[in-house]
View 1 (tube, helix red, strand yellow):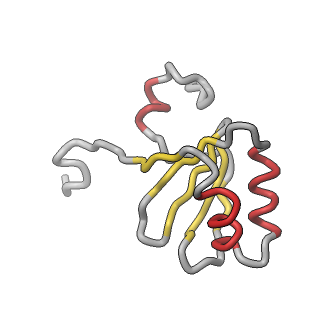
View 2: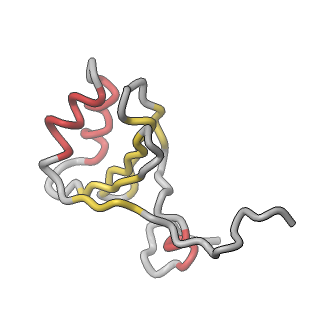
Length: 101
């Protein structure tokens, strides 16, 4: 069985989108978000995924604040977007992935 917290686990590298628990957002820009270790994983409505390194912050507190915010998008823009280092996530799939068998 794979350990999602083990960075050397090859199955972990195959799925950079996994989070410990996803929260579906009622937002015009954010579809869902979750935490994984010290990262906030965000799925935007355009189906792009980004991860934000929550250095110096408690990830659980960040997610709890997003859940409690009147506007998830406004909270994200003010408190996460420009404050934490981030990167867009991509998943390199084989060219024939998803083709009918």
